[in-house]
Length: 86
Image (tube, rainbow, N blue to C red; front, side):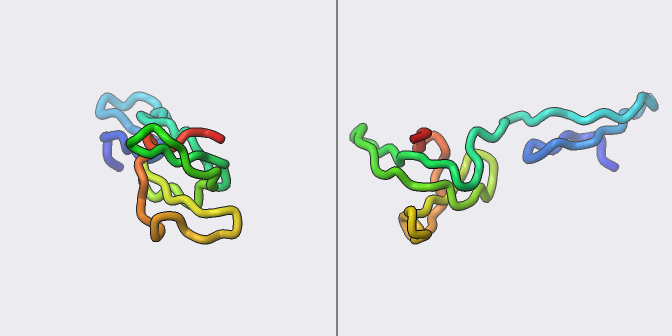
């Protein structure tokens, strides 16, 4: 097992000194969960939505859907800096 920490999820780490294994915390804790209602922020300061978080494919990224399940922006990944809780 590798001694390096995984930034995507909690990881069990074994040190080379033989210490007890431990779980490292998230480096970037997820702030949203699938199904959370959010607004999409536009560059002009306006908001669209509310939408729902459809998926969280990687740290700091999400896809959005409308209340009826239709993907927003063709299902493109959106940085979580561009969404806020509704």
